[in-house]
Length: 345
Image (cartoon, rainbow, N blue to C red; front, top):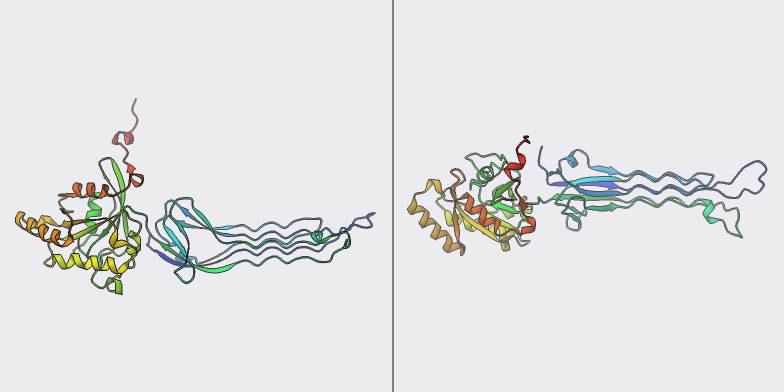
C-alpha cells in the first residue's frame, strides 16, 4: 500500500427536501383542509477515526464526497425521508484543515472520534404547518435548506511514542528492523527511506511504537532533499531518538545539522526529550569509541549512548533509555510467550 499523508477533499452535505402544498380530497369530505407534509433533512458529512489505517491513499482515487439530499414532502401529511449521511474513514492522527491549510477544524487522535464537517440542510415546511384559524387553506410551503459545500485538507500525523531523526544513512531503518517486525528498506546509499515507517518494539515486557522518517540534510527546512515534509509525523512523539553515524568523519557537524533543522521546523520539536546515540560502533575500536563519545557529549551537553544496529550491541540499553521518557499510559504490556502457545490437554 502506498503512503500518502496529505489529501485535498471536496465535500457537500445534502439539501433538505421541499415542503408540499396539498389538500385533502376525499368523497363526502367537503372541507378537507391542507395536508402537505414537510421535506426530509439532507444527509451530513462526517469524519471518523478508525483502526487499521495508516495512510490517506484512499483519498487519492476519490476526492468528492456528496451526502444524499432529503426527499420532498407529500400529501396526506407524509414527511419526506431524510438523506443518508456519508462518513469519511480516516486513520488515527488525522488533522482536518480548512481550505487555507492553516485553520484546524478537528484533530482525530483516538479510535472512534467523529466530527461533523458539513451539516445537512433542514427540510422545508409543508402547507399543513401554515394552517391557522384565520388562514385555513394556506397555499404556501418552504423550500428545503441548501447543503453546505466546502473544500478541506486531510493531513496525517502518525501516532508514535518514539521518533527517529538523523542524517541519511545514520542507521535509522537498520535500528527499526533490528528491534521490531517492521521491514523498512535498508541499503548503503542515502535516502533509502522515502516515507515514514512504523514499528512496535518491546523491552522489559512493555511495548511502544517507533516512527522512522526520511533523513534530514542541511537546508531541509528550505526544501533541500526531501525537505521537512515528514517531520510532522514525530510531533506527537514523547521522545526523539537522535542517531549519529559514528563512521562519519564530520560527527559534530552531523549532530548540529539535525539540531538546526529541528529548531527551524518549530512547534516544540527541539524542546522534546531527546536520546542521543552514537551509532555504527561496530566500525570503531575501543579508543575511537571513547574519544568520539566524549567529543559528542561535550557538544550535546547530555550523556551519549553507544549502539550498533547491525551487531545489536547496546540496543537494549537504548530501548530502556527511551522507555524511561514514555508515560506509563502510552506503554502496552507485551503478551507472554505462554499465551500464544497452542492449547494442550
